[in-house]
Image (cartoon, one colour):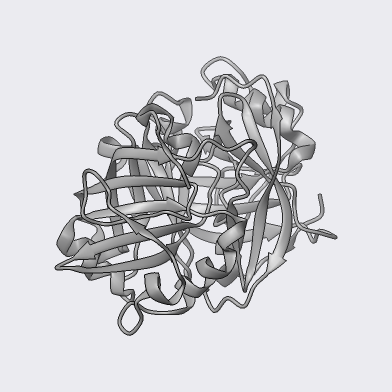
Length: 178
Length: 178
C-alpha cells in the first residue's frame, strides 16, 4: 500500500477513534507482531501515545529492551490476519511468514512497517516507569505514514469475545474540539 | 434510559472500541460534564481505566479534588449535546441545564450518571501520580450500568476537526483474544 508522510500534529485523528493496532517490534534481528487495542493519545504534538503490552506477551520484552515499536493500523481487508496475530505467540511463530504480512523498513526505528496496513506510526519509548505496575509504555511518534484513501478507512474496533465493530459512516458536527 | 447492573469483568467491552465518553464530576455541590475520548483500559478485573483530562479543563480540578467521576457513554441520538459539552466550559456554563441532560444519583460516587447515555461507569481515582506530567488519571470502575439494547450501540468515535465516525456493523471472528 503506497503511503505518504503524514503530519505529526494530525496523528491523534488516527488513534482517537479506537482502532485495533498491530504493534511491530524488533530486537537482535528478530521481529514480532502483536494485536493490541489498549492505547490512548496522551498529547498532540509531539504525538505521545500510551499503550498496554502485557508482560504475558512475547512483545513485552521486545519493546522493553529495544525501546522502539511501530503501531500499524489495519482495516477490514486483513481482519483474519489481525485475529491470527492475536491468537498466536511470537514465542513459537514467525507471524510475518505465517500470516503473509510484508515487513518494510522504517526510517527512524528498527521495528518494521506492515505494508498491508493503511497507516504506520514509528515510535520510540520515552517512558517505561509504569511498565512493571500497569504494563504501560509511553511512546513518542517519530514519523507517520498513511495511505491516501478514497474514503474513511474500515478500521476494526474490538468488542471482546470474537466480536469486532467495523468503522461506520462519518458525520460532521460543529465541533471546536481538537 | 432503563439500565441494568453490568458485570465488572465485561467493562472492557464498552471502552475498548474507543467511544467518546462524557465524564461527570462533582465537587462541593457543583457538577460538571466533559467530553473526552483519550482513554484506555489498563486491566480487566477489577476494571482499571486510564484517561487524560487536561489541566486546561474545568474538570481537571474537579476530579483531582473529588477523586471520583463517572464515565458515561453516549450514542448518536445525543451527538449534538456531546459536541455542545465539548465546546463549552464548566467555568461559565451549567451543562446539565444548557444541554437538557438528566443527572441521576450514582451509588458509589457523588458524581452523577447521565440518564440519556446508554452506559455509565462509576469510578474512583486510584492513582493520580501522572496528573501533573501527562494529565493522566487511573480509575477503578466500582459499578457499571448498561441499558439492554436491541442491537449494538451507535457510539461516536472522534476523528478530529468536527468529524465523528459512528459505530458500524459488527462481525464475529474466531478470536481467542479477551
